[in-house]
Amino acid sequence: MNNGVTFRVNLDNYLLHALQEDITSEDVTTNAVMPTYRLGRAELICKENGVLCGLSVFCRVFELLDSSFSFSTTYHDGDVVKKGSIIGILTGDIRALLSGERTALNYLQRMSGISTLTREYVKELEGYQTKLLDTRKTNPNMRAFEKYAVKVGGGQNHRYNLSDGVLLKDNHIGAAGSVTKAVELAKAYAPFVRKIEVEVETLDMVDEALLAGADIIMLDNMDNQMLKEAIKRIGNCAETECSGNITKERLKEIAELGITYVSVGALTHSAPILDFSLKNLLPVESVE
Image 1 (spheres, helix red, strand yellow):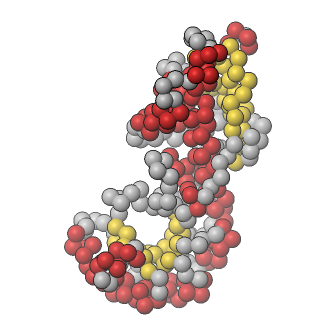
Image 2 (cartoon, helix red, strand yellow; image 1 turned 90 degrees about the vertical axis):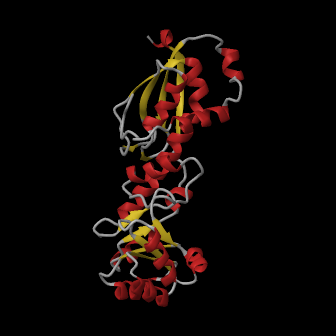
Image 3 (cartoon, helix red, strand yellow; image 1 turned 60 degrees about the vertical axis):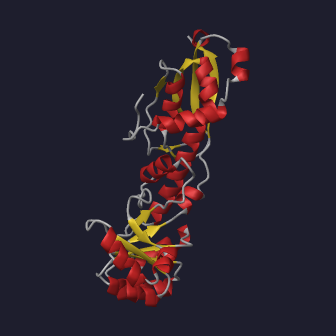
């Protein structure tokens, strides 16, 4: 089953490690009640309203345990789901359905929760040019899944990792000695096709970043009045991004100032899960 948007990289190792975490030697309970193969069927049920994300990952967990596993659904990643809806029917070895249930649901719930929260933030920016970005504040070994979920929810991805772009933050600037020196060193080291982004906290740092030739200026932890002045000074000389204490309630106010990007760590580090459950597991002959 290959429903929704397909990942373009092989994530099986992550899924296998998650399964190994849950099954160190055997699933004692399942092996006790189901010692041999038996074909079964179960329902995936949504328990909250939200945005669905991670169906391909959910299914892949079971496929790694049972090559004959199948999943029937009319839903796709990005669809709005309602409490009580049957999202799909799982068919496969009952032992695989029981042993993979928690791991598969953990991915689906986590990813759908991020997509749901992202969609709420994106709605606040409707009608504005400002784009919503995620951050690297992701759970270890979950970044690919979580950043994908942000995109499904309507947001955009900031750099994927430290190899993906130049972002001079406060400690980089401190290590280099100044904004000017940090930008100078970055331009000398990074390929010319790479944009240079600089994080600033004061208007003086804004001015210095502009003179140094920064391509993107990240305005960190500024109130709306300071943001307005910073954006005015920057004009069309660089793209602008704001971060730090960005709540959903502030988004429209910030967008009205004309900021290019808003990055929100909460999309990945604070999103609640969207609850799903696997129910009504029965041998196939019992339901035919």
